[in-house]
Image 1 (tube, rainbow, N blue to C red):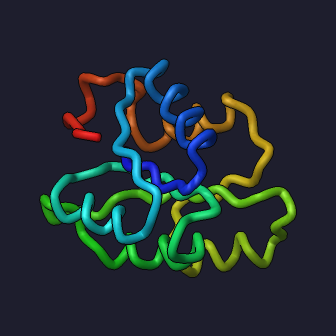
Image 2 (cartoon, helix red, strand yellow; image 1 turned 45 degrees about the vertical axis):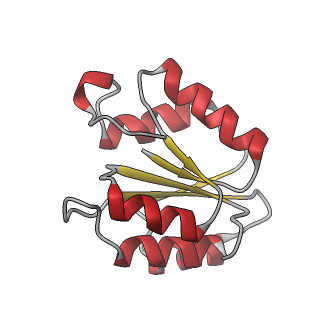
Length: 131
């Protein structure tokens, strides 16, 4: 999984949660770093949290959807929007290519359900990812 998030605290919180469930994540702060990672690694999931340095969350989603992984596959995109976002922004997320749109606040059970939908929560099922 690749986590694109400019916020240090939220990035670390998500990384800790993923590690508890046997998942490893590459962590980046910006769109440029995300594109570089996709060129050299293959990720099943890309988790885009707002705010993202250098681009809107929708712009990051569009760019990731246009960019294949290093192995030629396309990742699933999970986007997180703030609680002040409405149905319009969730619709924009879909248009940008987002597979799943979470709205804060959400609890760990919601995130676990989304992750289970796309990947078995077992580290043996995931490719090795260098952070």
